[in-house]
Image (cartoon, rainbow, N blue to C red; front, side):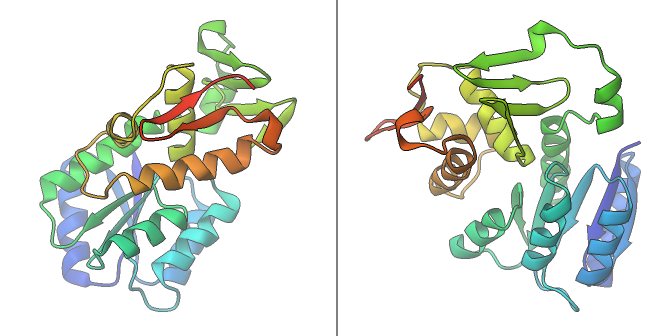
Length: 235
């Protein structure tokens, strides 16, 4: 049973979401303020975080940043009434993987939850460590190596820590080397739902990934093709 933590201070919303997720087979824990939410996430092994932005004690953006200091892998879904594009980008930039605006249809929430859990493969670090290596799950491109069993990413021997969305984005590039990929294609493949966020979210995450992968200007792997999108190609 997948374990979800809901960090939300509106009791009516908590009751509605908790009941619905439990009926869909999820184990749900609740924190009614941001600081308690951080403590629970840091002290437990959750498969997904659902997070409001307007919270007592610590707002959701700061909660997300605090979680990301120690946990880059757990998917974080923002669920908030703050639905402007600026707020959406702020949420994603703070380390969130997805953003759903209130009011919402519960069926859409469940779809987002399932998508995020699929994206993280639902395999715990302890389980992946026990799996035997398989070359079919190891990607190598130039000096970049990704083991899709252990989720370990290295470049030139240096290990790189990625969030779940950054990792999914990198895998998509690795599965399409040397191909010019449009922003719309990336949005559909990585986020998996018809979003109304605009393609700027793609640019934001490509820039995050570049900063972590491409430390030298003359050794870049991800290149911009003006007016068309992005391409993964060797320096």
